[in-house]
Amino acid sequence: MELAWDPWDWQNYPITQQPEWHSRDELEAVRRELTLRAPLVYPREIDALKRGLARAAAGRAFVLQAGDCAESFHEHSAAAIRAKLRVILQMAVVLTYSSGVSVVKIGRIAGQYAKPRSADTELHQGVEIPVFRGHIVHGDDPTVEARRPDPQRMLTAYDYSRATVATVRALTEGGFSDLSRAHSWNQDFVASSPEGERYETIAAEIERALNFMGACGIDLSHEEVLHQVTLWTSHEALLLGYEAALTRLDPASHRYYDLSAHQVWIGDRTRDPKGAHIRFASGITNPVGVKVGPGMEVDDLLAVCGELDPDREPGRLVLVARMGHEAVRARLGDLVTAVRVAGHPAVWLCDPMHGNTFVSEAGYKTRDFEDIMDEISGFFEVHRRLGTWPGGIHIELTGQDVTECLGGGEGVLEEELSRAYDTICDPRLNARQSLDLAYRVAELLIH
Image: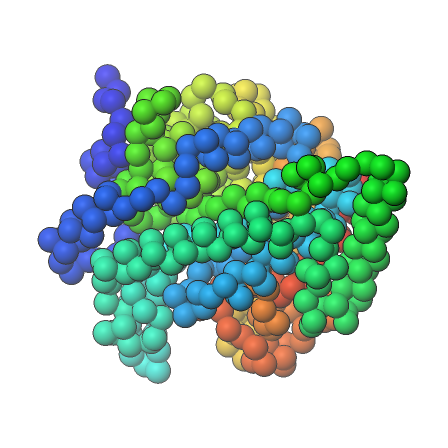
């Protein structure tokens, strides 16, 4: 008989990708402190996101999930958050204006501080050290001491996440996201590019349309959708002690919500149907994502779907395909078909980043823009062939002028990677590349 779920019973299940904490007493003290902290988000907000995802599941919306590979304690500033938000807003405008499809905007933000890794250690200058698992666990300096897991960092991650949520709310509700200000979202280093010039054309057309409606006597001042946007928060639910400590029973609905974010996802390395991560996610009311890699078999995927979405609830389940451009056309179709036949109204997203990573000759981990676009194209091709809806994209990007991914409209070359390679983990698209991607995805949406 299945036992009743509670936020901490995942501790009775097999678990992977966890740090080797050196003090159990300190860990438990931090967890107790987190249970006393205020929520970062609220149940009614989570329910609203679920309704948006239900529209995407029905083919009436497109999801743009985007943000840092791993948020950094070093780059926590209002300016960095504003730059990231600007890029996401630009991409959403391009997708909506060009395709006529509404966009659900979800940030990899305000909690994306932990990272799963393929190995426990790495070599640095001939010395074996623990691999970097995110700032919520330890520092990124390549020394044994810096890589020592520190539970106190979970409290720091909470503080930074709370500040980020407050900043995002201030920006999205305080006029920054007003559609009449679409011109101002074009950052200097983007505005001078071909992508930025195309965006300026769209911004000018939106401005003319708003002016025309105003001249016709239509009062737009009370149209909230023109003046505010909602950016939902999300991160990978990797450190289950952190997630459980911020999970609360809602007295109104008598349901549990993980109030660390509006949506969380389970990675391809932790999605064992009988493991701790799926067990934890099965009991929260939030929308839950699952990364679906090329090694995922149909039976495993259906088992995961059965654990997470037994009631076939629209907006509950988000399946994020991360196949790699060479595998997506061959592997994705059977999985999509099986989920549809099983009756799960899942939203399918394409993560074209993680399956297309390689190391350049100069030793930089990178991704090629054309590989990224080829995986997205393959994702659309599979869904078009099956008559299903390509529900969205899941992208790693930054608002900074980095050179971490090759290619794009202005073509970052391999010898240019060292100019501004700033990521603490995986390579991200810069703002120009992100805008270029949005235009090309919009073309896929309308064809």
